[in-house]
Each structure stands twice: as C-alpha cells, then as structure tokens.
Image 1: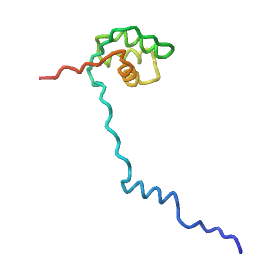
Image 2: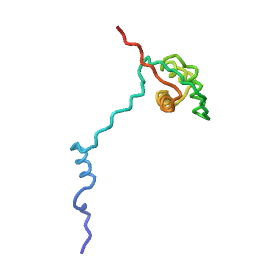
Image 3: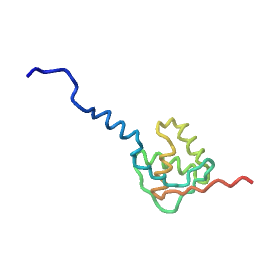
Image 4: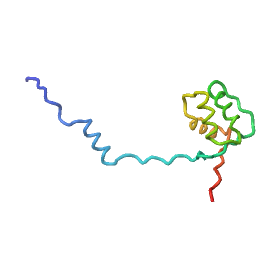
Length: 108
C-alpha cells in the first residue's frame, strides 16, 4: 500500500475549537471582594508581622500608607520604581490580615 499525504480523518484542533465556541465553558466564579476601590483607606491591623525579602519591602510601603489611600500606596511603589503592581500586594496584605481597607465615603 502506498503512503499518501492526505490528512487523517477528523481535525482534533478544529473539533476542540468549535466545542469551545459553542459556549461549553464553565462559568467564571465571581471575584472575592476584599474592599479595593479608588479612594479606599488603608488601616494596619494590630499584631507583629514578620516578613522577609520583597514582602518586607512592600510592607514598609504599607506602613507609610497607614491611614492614607490606596493611591498613596501605589504612588510610593511607583516612586521607588517597583515593577510589580501595587494592587496585588494590597490584596496579599488584606488576605494575610496585615491591614484592612475602608471604603471611600459616599458622595452626596
């Protein structure tokens, strides 16, 4: 029997693509609300926190931003020419219970 250059029957990639396009995706879970919003105030919690390396450096920015807004925290990081985003670090510290975020006052 002679070999041919014909593709095998059924294109697996095309089949997967069409199944995904049909909307068979699992719905995305809603994001956990940890209080981040423009103008939210950072409040440090009581207790001793022991961090090393990058966490210690970002915690220093957090300490300087105690009682100030999340924009102040991001500004400190930007001024220090940090390459990582400040929002992820705020989430880390909230999840680690190093601080809490207070929603900005509602405008009347």
